[in-house]
View 1 (spheres, rainbow, N blue to C red):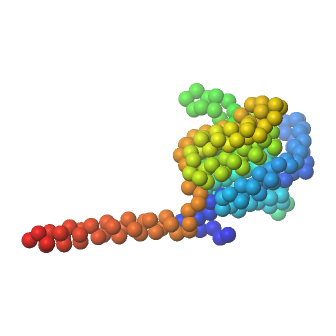
View 2: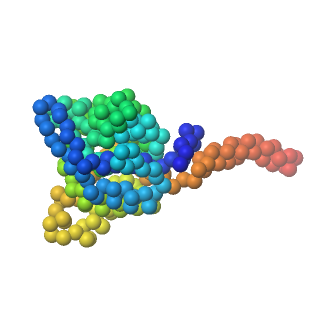
View 3: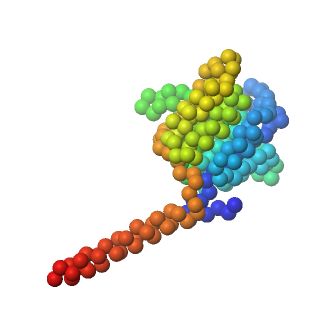
Length: 256
């Protein structure tokens, strides 16, 4: 699908970093991030609900994200996230590394301050993306807050290390809700209630479903416009404005 900078007809960007194992060395702390088996299922199901482009596996690179993300109305990132409680600007999302780029595959929060997004909604389907520190007069600084600073007024984020399977199921029903015109928070609430209807005694624990929350503007997101509809609406309004003086002149002549 071609990108139109004029009327912004691209709706949803998927980024799915399908990692077998990524090892990160940071401040002498070594952690291993394993594969997320339900993430690809999540994105495939959502792509059946809304018009979207997806970047999977080797395509889900940091350089690809930086180039394409500003042109999309919705961003959905299913990947690993690393929370850095000692330096919040170094909390990060983990993409696949592109050997042909200078990017290292680790997208830090501070990099969002040099990015300008046009997304109405960003969904961070990853762990700890809403975690941060409370700053007086500012709120909580986190990865999610960074996306809002970059221009996305609405963010769906996680408050802890969320379960891969339950998050995928909830996100699928969440997109069913917003595609039907529901407000963001209401769509997420209904998706959680549906999840609970099918959960067992273990997976009904809030640990599995309560971690994903919405932050920021809760207005419905427009995701199913037909290309050109915004231009058509603009033309119709202009024609009405041009015809109004003619209407009043004709009306006045009839009364003479």
